[in-house]
Length: 374
Image (cartoon, rainbow, N blue to C red):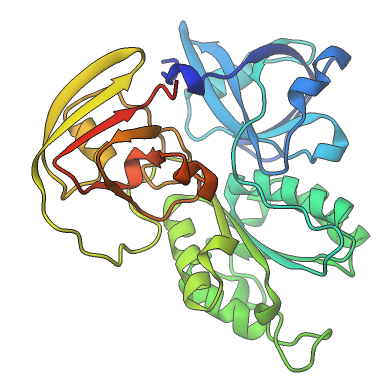
């Protein structure tokens, strides 16, 4: 089914011609689309962003989001797409897609981005698992191209060697920028010669990485490479993100410097909620969604706002339930909520009254919100 989004969340689609199609692994493909000169302003993007493909599968219209592997300076749209299971809409789409075909591709969006600092000396590390390499690859290519003083470390987990997506491109980057980029591959179903690289990327593995790889800093004998880390980029499944984000935070990296992108629905908080809230019962809620006005009563504030609306079967848009995707963004027009830590809203947006329903705990007997953002 086609995704439903409030009016202000809708994005523009254009028909782009497929220029290249490559099979990278058994179930991962790379697609490259041509961008006509007249549409190039519409497809300017930041590293780490994604596009939505609109296509038909088995008679139904489907919309799926895919992160770009291309960097902004390359002036093209390249995607990495994984077939998660047989007879999926993605498999159907790829089976019927040939070079030269036109596909409806949305304009780029997403907030898995970082601020460029081309004149600074920075250390940035990335953690990826499986197809989660796609936005990390975009980031790393962009950083290597635009920040000559930045050094990068990538820790990339897969089950087996033959499942590594974009291996040739990654190894070519490591060879070209051997003084600034180091890549370490980890395997969960294949035992490498060095046992350090066996197993999933998790909290225990992060501690080993800190102590055995990021320990000695040639640029500063009095500190470690880990001490110099400025930004952390993480992309993969929810459990992997949660484990690594907390491991980084517990080892001294500030949350504002830990960035993550989720590739599937995830219903848990990334970081533990460290605050108790007063119990409020029989909460009156008015909200606007898809140009319709609704009123309901929430039993209490033990669950976050989005979860309660979904329990009552309101068609509220969501993807992650973890404060990452921004699908449930809305404006608080009346009442009070506690907005928990999230990866999406900026400080300026929060001050303007924007909240994420999935990360909001209601703190007043009556609230009014607007999902249409108009």
